[in-house]
Amino acid sequence: MGRVFSGLQPTGELHIGNYIGALRQFTDQSGHYYCVVDLHSLTVEPDPATLEARSLDLAALLVALGLGRKSAVFIQSQVPAHTEMTWLLACEARIGELNRMTQFKVKGRNRPQSSVGLFLYPVLMAADILLYDIEEVPVGDDQRQHLELIRDVAMRLNSHYGDVVVVPRAVIPTLGGRVFSLTDPLQKMSKSDPDPMSKVLLTDPDELIVRKIKAAVTDSGREVLHDPVAKPGISNLLEMAAVLSGEPVTVWAERYRSAGYGPFKQAVADQVVAVIGPLRDEAQRIRKDPAELGRILEDGRLRAREQADLRLSAVKRAIGLHL
Ligand code: AQP
Image 1: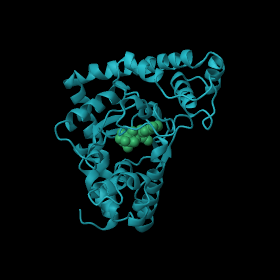
Image 2: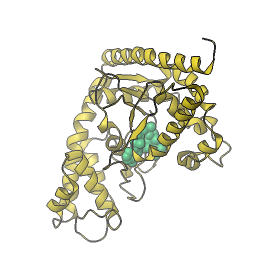
Image 3: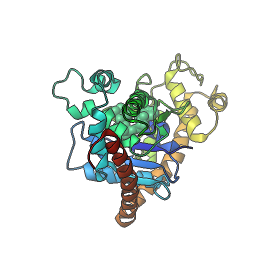
């Protein structure tokens, strides 16, 4: 596997969609970078009272996944090269292409009060990735468009100044790239959905996970079938269970086909608890050990800084900026 970067925002609480689409693919290898992108979270209503605590919660979760030993786990705002690189790339990105980004269209366009930061969100993301000579970016399907933009910006930079950055590619899981809401299986499961029943959080206690899965909106009929068009609710649960168990969707569908929705949902809930429960408990344990977490983050910061400064200098030199 090539060098990997992935960033997660310390906004809202992470859900099972974030786990299945992104976190689950992360592996602890040297040359891999996992980042708490606190600067990205400033693009929508930052809350100074909770930002630092949320960043540390997220860092603890990454460490609980086994990251930060060989790979670097760090906090974006602690590596100044990210913001400097953002300006250099902002001068390569085009207003037209940023305007076409679906995330911007949904969250910010036509709202004069939206921050310029929201518009530049994918440029900061480009800086995150291009600083680390990244080949692969494991993300959910909703980030596909941003990754395409980042590739275009990287290629434009290279064509203007010589091959100064590696052009990355998105790695999107074929199954689970888009986990859907438990209350509306036609919508993406989303941090910003105000309905707590729409998502299983990675901090939810076991009983609540079971309650949410049992209450998930399902389809008419009682047969457990994988048919995302006719049975989006059941198909969403089937895909979730398959990804988390490592068994094919067909095996799950066959096993519960005529058992009825009740026993099927209970089995899915048990599977979710079996994966999320230990991760949640380990993240809580690490969060209560600030010395250990601080040591891992400091080590990550130093490693990230070394690489980021190196790439930033190379880009500045190529552009003709005096170093
Ligand atoms: N529903 C999903 N299914 C699969 N993957 C998903 N991801 C997000 N939602 C799903 C992936 O998880 C990572 C999250 O990165 P983030 O923390 O920067 O994302 P976010 O935008 O704060 O989280 P949401 O839930 O996507 O929030 P909303 O919808 O409110 O903006 C990314 O790799 C993403 O693809």
